[in-house]
Length: 156
Image (cartoon, rainbow, N blue to C red; front, side):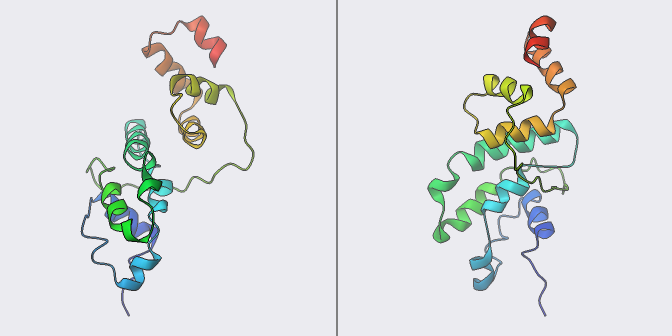
């Protein structure tokens, strides 16, 4: 019996190891089952320091989210995988937790603040950023951008 290459733990390890051969090594049946969209959902989150979290979110947005559906379809799965392998900074295998989408949409202050900073981001991305950064981190970021404390207090 062969090893299950399509378990998310293995896929994320190959993702972080930048294994560009991974897709080619799948059997024809495994290639049919392979779901590149999961690379966005799992790959964007990482249980590591804030620098890694920011890196993975930004790299996933830039390299996968932007034009991912322009190259979707079964004949482009390899290209999608190759793009996914560019996300990791190549600093070892990280744990990628699943962040379930929130059922209720709340337009909290953090999301409004992030929307003003990043008007080009999708709502899901803004929500994810608000979840992985607490208010203290957002305030520090606002200060680093030159915002005054009184303006930060109004925003956050």
